[in-house]
Length: 111
Length: 116
Image (cartoon, each protein chain N blue to C red):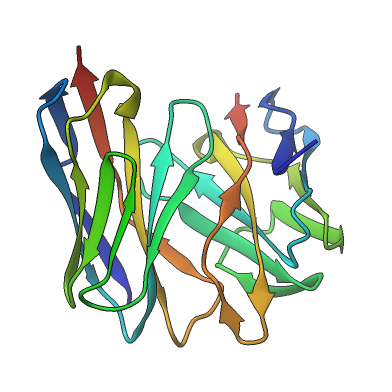
């Protein structure tokens, strides 16, 4: 059974204080690993897809990396508007169409 | 309208009521999904429709009944729900490519359901 574990559950940062969110996964043949951002009261918004170990993707202050067992979402010099819950999901190569999600990390960035 | 739109945004119903949630996607995708999001729990996949055919039914109780009349519209019919069914119900769409799926899900803003 595919599993996704995200840590920490919650993270509080000062504006400009860089940090990383972790997503550990077990899946029988990774088709893709996905990061989403979810603001309160809204649906998740797609951020990145990573397909193979060693791959990296960047968008503004966010950088996602992937190894064979985990993914990191690095946040560089965060701003208050980066406050949100960040969700990680995996899709197995043998189970097209089904994404397994983690519980998420709630990030709060204080000015 | 752009993206994925869901109505209503909020719904309160009694356990004996019958109601429906509606989802419409304007992205030209060929797959649509219903997810349930409860507090302190990960997103749970409920149903998947690909090319209007249901391809996944994740052991969801029969009091939830999906309907996909075409590739742009998805409904979730609700009847005799329980208080533990209170949650945020999210609709999503993606582009299926044969047995492959790009994986990226595009979500609506959700329908917040409260069952009294």
